[in-house]
Length: 82
Length: 248
Image 1 (cartoon, rainbow over the protein chains, first blue to last red):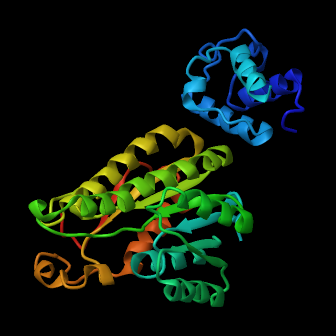
Image 2: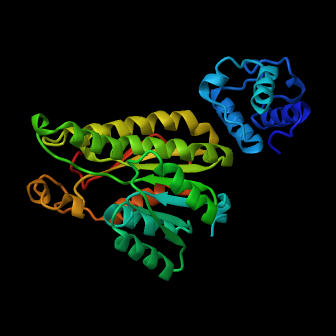
Image 3: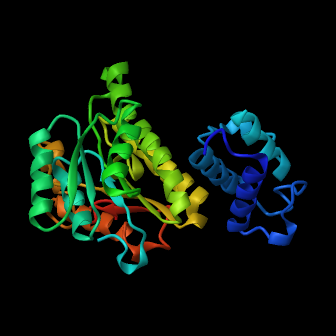
């Protein structure tokens, strides 16, 4: 589904991944910071892997450095697909 | 037979498995029900013999040529195994080389060759292994170190000792990073084991071994089998010496 995924689909996938990592479902929203969701660096590594598997998007460590919120993560994937 | 005892389906990769300790480890993991990738660099006949032995015993195995010191090899080995047997959930970094000499006589090539194969290759294979293991919430990485470097020095092996000490440090560090995803990373440090690689150095060491004999590849493989088992889920970041009491 590479390149055809909509922003909504990507956001939904990121939300489900965060829930799988243990974030409280009612706390997950685009403006939530990973810190507030207790999402740590290893979770972000796994998120990058999920995105890579599902959308064929390669995320490098430097890409992820400035990603602090859910929206920023979705933006990053959308921009890579664009 | 993956899936028994609740572990996920997948495969095992053993580097340097055409003979010696690696061959014994490949056979031991196959007996545990893992389909095994039997990596070799040059000894194709040896690797095929290991695959035949596993197949005759009712297991599954595949010989995989590749020099792990080559940066492209890790992905090639994993992709081949993933295609045939599913995700690699057990990685045994066993491939190792020696190029002995007193420090003034070790040239850059001898240094690089030993560090590339024994340490850098193990890192690349570990890096490639981790993402699928993290996603599977299951993984076992076992690094074959040595009492040389990991526990003590040994004149004439500065390159080898440095590579093995580095391997143990990497083991501990990565173990801490991934423990909460059900992935364990451990090392096994053999002492004097009867293999082609230790031929000629056994005699002067033997008198220092409390067990008064050299160990066998199978005795090392048994430790790896344990560390790779479900039962060792809470053992991570350790370096298990298998040396008949040599470093006791």
